[in-house]
Amino acid sequence: MKSWIEYWDSENITSDNIWKKGNTFLYKNTLKSINYRPTDVVMDIGCGKGFFSEIISNKVKKIHLLETSNECLNFCKRKFKRNKNIFYHDLPHNNYLQYDFIKDKVNKIFVISVVQYFNSPTEIKELIKECQKLTIPKDSQMIIADIPINRSILKDTMGLIYNSIKLHTLFDTSLLLLKSIFGNYRKVRQNLKIQVYNQNELKSMLEEMKLDFQILKGITNVRNRISILINF
Image (cartoon, rainbow, N blue to C red; front, side, top):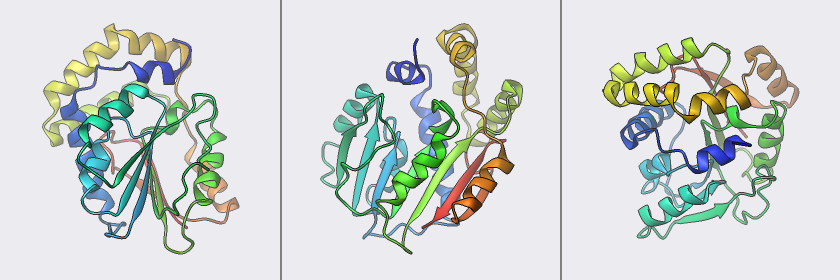
């Protein structure tokens, strides 16, 4: 594998049950900070198989699904074929941080389990700047969820197992871990690594950008990762 994009284009080790329950867990936690309205226009960047957008599809006006994986986009097109408010956008592998093809103004942006696969930690700043260009001032929110802040695979694994017990996905999670250890994921992660962020550096960057933000903990199914909520 030459890139994480190539890997995720053919990934099939994570069960739909984990994705569904993990995204439901995240959605319920976002309700503390986000009010989903019938006038909302949403961007779901790195949407995968659309499990998060599936939850909110009948609560908002429009959803733009953005994805580098053709396989995932095609899956979403089949899943949402009856949904007239969902639109699909293929992100170029070499230019996944430019969104000027979105002609709507958006006021809800979700980036879930994506930034750890960026080429560089500095791309998170570019991501925010590019998204901000599309937002409605004083009426928009962005969540960047599931950000790794330590390099310990063991801590990630223990956090995943802890929440799998709470979400009743222990069997699926155990299979996932076995497939990860003995399958292609372990080899790819050893070769390509994932981006791990420093929480204090992220906070300093967001303050430097003069953003209204909160660091959120425990809102995804990987217990020891953080998420960022930004109010534009």
